[in-house]
Length: 257
Image (tube, rainbow, N blue to C red; front, side, top):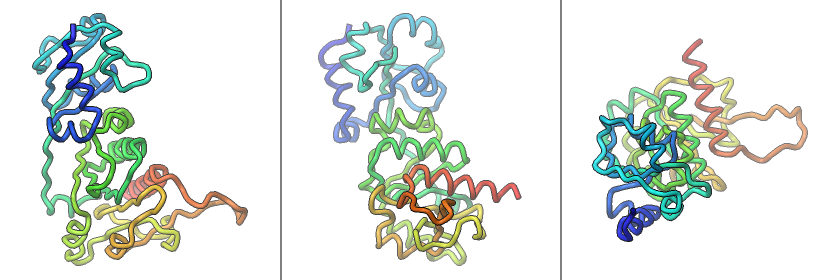
């Protein structure tokens, strides 16, 4: 049986303030918790229905605390509309990176991204296309928001997300001769006609405002995703996660040519 303090602590992790203070976040559902158990992250607690624990929980799992709970208790701590068998509490990992490493590969940069679903989807895309690092502006949505975690479908355990002042990041890379900083713009060059390198930064902007003016000044390769409507009226723009999928796919397609 869960005590009140445990319930209060887990529910507090649904808010960014308490995740930052405690250093923990929530992982929910059969698939995600299974991926968590296979990851290198430090796991504080696994709280699940007895049938799930008996069927799935490996005896060798490196978990500090395993607690069998009822469906009613799971409902009290879950952030899902329909709770799914198990919830875990994991330590937020502390990632680091070397600028030299980043300069030799493709990385994504997200400028003031706000929607949890978009960030989660972009992390899945990065995982699919072999992009290991994502840099977010400090005011972007929190990667450990429960909605983001769900939307990653497990990519959160493989992709490193760094929150950093983007101007400082851009200032560093603009000093590297020939280094490409790509971004999507309506006035950019057709992505299907442009030479694309397999190293550089790919900047994606805010859902409604796009790439901010201050970050836009650092972009030296402006790309445009054309429509194929034959001149008829169409949507003004693409969803940022859809645009990211198209851009990443085209970059990786070029590497096969």
